[in-house]
Image (tube, rainbow, N blue to C red):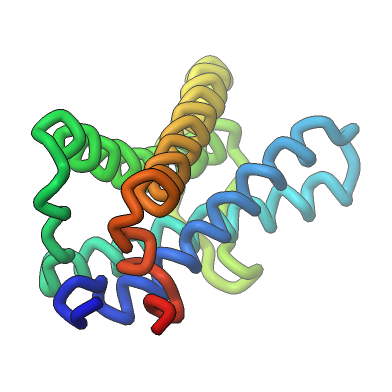
Length: 181
């Protein structure tokens, strides 16, 4: 595989870092939501918020990397529907990677719970405290999370299809190691 057929190293590193954080944050959110109200739950919610805000910041950096270093072209064998699905899937993932943490931050603000990143950096409230708005934002946040989970599963399945069925080396474009020689 030629270097111009791979993503830039910063894009690859950010991809895997963000992917790990998204999966961990999603699972952590499910675990915390089932916990009874306690000081431990508040501590774990803070960790969940830190991870979410970290995803938001890293995705902004990832988008800048993508704007300055264009991704490699899609393989020529992909038909127009596959290309549309690939571009649409990436667009959906980017939108959700911004929308999910932002709705979480908005929800926190509406509930009146501040977001203090790593116990050091207080982030501004995005909206005034409002229980009804908070409840709506909670539903939106949860729905967007499940939509992102579906998009991530689709993304992984597409990568597996390219690797197993198409055998086109597409998986190696984002691999930390690159193709096997």
